[in-house]
Length: 292
Image: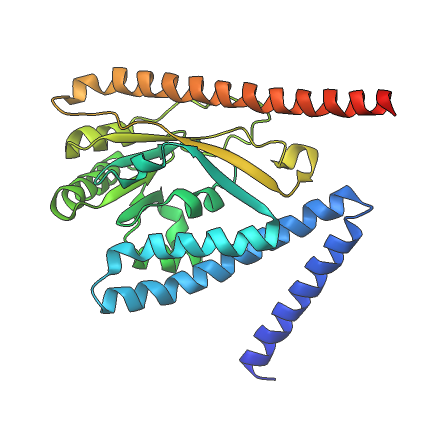
């Protein structure tokens, strides 16, 4: 049996299992959770494979710096149809054109990969922990597409990576996207983990603005703790750029604190609006039931 036959057989089996779980999910909620998880990870693998090819081709024709943007767009469309989840930029779309900049966002789960598909601007790269470089397909794509790998256990190499990123930003107007929380929160509440300062040091070092991006708490769509993974729309706000002109490393603490406070305030406001809509829907349903 050839390698291609093994691959084809594996993909077919994966699709059959996923579709079967979706069908079972009509009666068993946990089956729907499993189905969307499989669909999401299958989409991730497919898009990462596409990213490897796209990165090679784009580098050969001189457009390697848009590799991550091109791959992010594939996440947007593939995962939209395989999971039924989409992100909607409800405010600040124009701020995504800021270049170069350090874009930062709150990090809730693996589903944030799909969020990047909606907001990721051209000429932008992500940062990632160094260990991801060794993951087949995903790591290959990230290496080929100029990901800034950070070794969190080694401060010296981490500083060198940020120095290199700052040079790239100044010389090629390349932006960088960072999750300053450093890890996924998986929170069922609108809250933020403490921010690491790397993104803010980088922005000050490169002399570029910070553009905060806030996704509403989407535990109503995905909550591993409650085995919940539903189709739905998640709102995103892009806040105005924060200038770092004239700032020094001594200002990073205050910059980190004020930025986090601004993002948390926006996150709480978005959650209040979401709850108001839920309450209105419940009230409307109750009223209709009474009239009947």
